[in-house]
Image 1: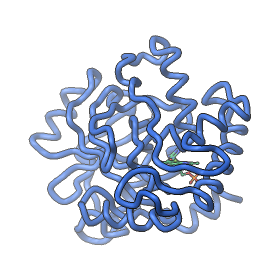
Image 2: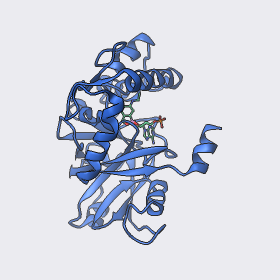
Image 3: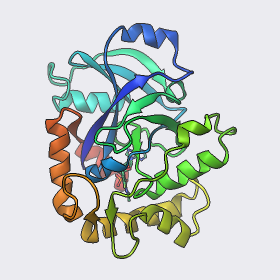
Image 4: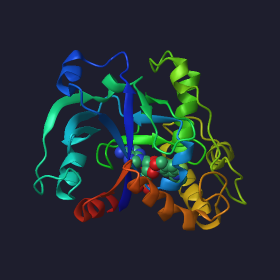
Amino acid sequence: QEYTAVKMEVLEWGPKAKSEMLQAIGGKKVWLVAATLRPETMYGQTNCFVGPTLDYGLYEAGSDLFLITDRAARNMAFQGTFGGERGEYKKVVDVKGEEVIGTKVRPPFGLVEEVYVLPMEGVLATKGTGVVTSVPSDSPDDYRTLMDLRKKADMYKIKPEWAAVDPIPVLSTPKYGDMAAEVLCKELKIQSQRDTKLLADAKELAYKEGFYNGVMTVGDFKGESVQDAKPKVRQQMIDAGVAVPYAEPESEVISRSS
Ligand code: ZZB
């Protein structure tokens, strides 16, 4: 799987950030790095998700730090992302997902320029970087989770204003208009982020319709097909220094799908 790892710069740490972590950071720039298969949707980022119970770390990436899982750091070290010796990487401090909830970050190429980190129950430690950027216009998981959080902000221990950015249309398809995720969650009667079977179906439908029939409605490639825009937006992000290519090792991909 060839992902695009998008870099979300930390603008302000949330209330649960530990002093130990802040000390370890010193004056360095920190990026939450999210793996996506939909770089063309990055205009519509409304928040970022981490798994609150998952283990992350801050890893040296040149003179900056990446907040990702250990597994992702190891993969990046073998892919040359950090610029050091192949396969070598350095963690400066451990971080639990819940410690970064409420942190303000800048979503690269986002039409909204400041968004917050929120908790998502289904984030897999075994996929991508463990950090997920949220595009609730086109990702059913993101849409449903954002709506769950809004309904029960207290229970999820978040401030309502962290979940206040509405889904942002970025592309249009004949079947689902410009809010595929919302339409599909309604059509399939998806009630919660825990409806994983239905969400997997919705994701498949959204992927297919978006990829084959989607047309961009915002950004530099407005009016172009999603298929054409996807690699172009990806390259722009890489050139701008806000994304890096990221691949999952073949053996893991095979064992996951079997
Ligand atoms: C932004 C985005 C916008 C995404 C969209 C999807 C969609 P796949 O196909 O199963 O490999 N993701 C990335 N890492 C994780 C993780 N550790 N745990 C849970 N979800 C994760 O799924 C890849 C997608 O799953 C990624 O692409 C990311 O969400 C999420 F409009 O990034 B995506 C129809 C989907 N639309």
